Image (cartoon, rainbow, N blue to C red; front, side):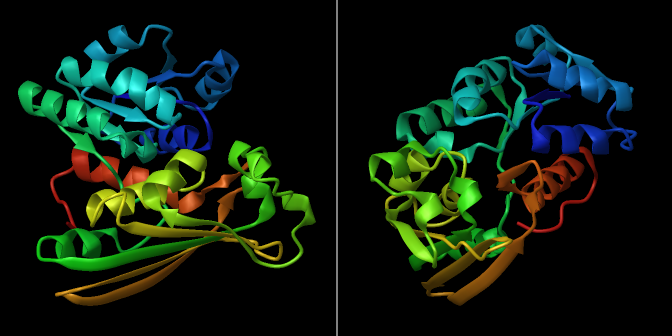
Length: 266
């Protein structure tokens, strides 16, 4: 297996893989080599790689936990080599041409692109409902100010996160724009859109709440199937408040399904 990215989620996955008999070796690539070197000391299976294409050759599954830019650069290369990929930075698929390119490559090479549920519950239900007809999907995300530190869109809009004293809606629109403006914060909106009615019909509202200690997502969907409403209140990673711990657990769950004999859920 190869992991692209050695941040909070990549490290959590690598540590878990130590206990999986199905995985013998874990190649890890990161632009900061020192991050991988620290991980190697606690994970005997982990090896640092500087050449990803060589690492791809010996891997059955490529896992991206780095960034949308990493998806754009490396996922097509992995698919061209006939490798299955598991993508965390789902916002990369906001561009229809890129998504279609990956779909065609996967079909031609006989491999798959996997997208885990991430930091929300309810994705399986949305996938099932989409088989029939969904009328509307809304996701509302509530996070503490620190989760939006150094977001360029907020600076452009003149929003000072430190000046916010009560819950404030900082974005309301469709998922396509939300993913572009908040690439590290709302991958869940991209996943929800792919599962349901698309990026341009999925409504996203993002709220900064100075009293929030959790990353919270509320999903509402209505259609012929009935209605889905679910809340997810996530513990953020201590060293990365933009990311919820559940996102890492979702990735691990997906890897277990891919490597195992049973698949529970859609």
